[in-house]
Length: 405
Image (cartoon, rainbow, N blue to C red; front, top):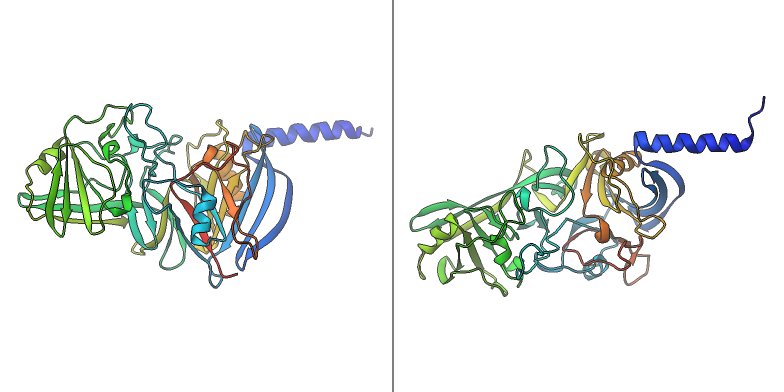
């Protein structure tokens, strides 16, 4: 007996829904055609069906082997600053980009304390370390997968290969009374009892936030015992009982201490010799990063990380690595009304796997998710997805793609 077409279509719909529930996002209708942005850089969109409903994926493929193609961190010029992704891309002449790391977006738990806008994880731009990672308990964003922490990065090394890794701060402060370990570099939260260094890269935003919360509780009160000293040309030139604000002169560093760290700094006097040394060290690799951005891994060696959330759907951004680190896949979901439910983190890992990524890395999502490309001959980029807030949210950094036209 012939089964009516309507019954066949209904059965197919049910099967697709079950596949989505069991295996993650399911490919649907798609504009499979790639549009060339520049040599080695192409863009396309396609639709998937997740547990929350339909989602539209915006994808940029970047061949790092193509002549003239490069990747770097897009920033507003300071760690503690934000700007729309399109503005960051245009300022650098990027041909494509996606938003970057999660960041200190609010300070409602600390009335009167200024939100810094600074990112959570480490950051390297042009081969230069800009900042280190905040303590795990101080991060913003969804829960981290088991076994990961705030030091996770996606980056490209001097060998022009992309890879996932971890960047750890290695730093010391040498004083007349001895040496102490540096607990932070240009970060909005310092470990309890530590001393952190702030350079001109930080910007003009108040440094008070660095002494609020604890290593395990972002909402904990600000430290009552703090101290700050300014070091210029190897000598202490100023000191204060509380962290300050305002630009830091090139060649100077401000040391901020909390609890035990504050007591160590309080022993210093103007004129004392102080040495400050810091660098970011890549765990398990001797290949220096030219570029690195924070976030967290979701796919490693072709397998999703254990414990990924498969229930909470949202608009998200991510980056995939393919072809032995020679190809990057920038991805952002559309935040338009028809697609605003988005995908779960587990579904993002599944989509990255489907488009050929071996490793995958989650970036900030929600209203931050933004992907832009520049048409040939155009003076500026065009935002390709619809930000879920209706307009671009200012972000602290992004992944920028550069190429000869």
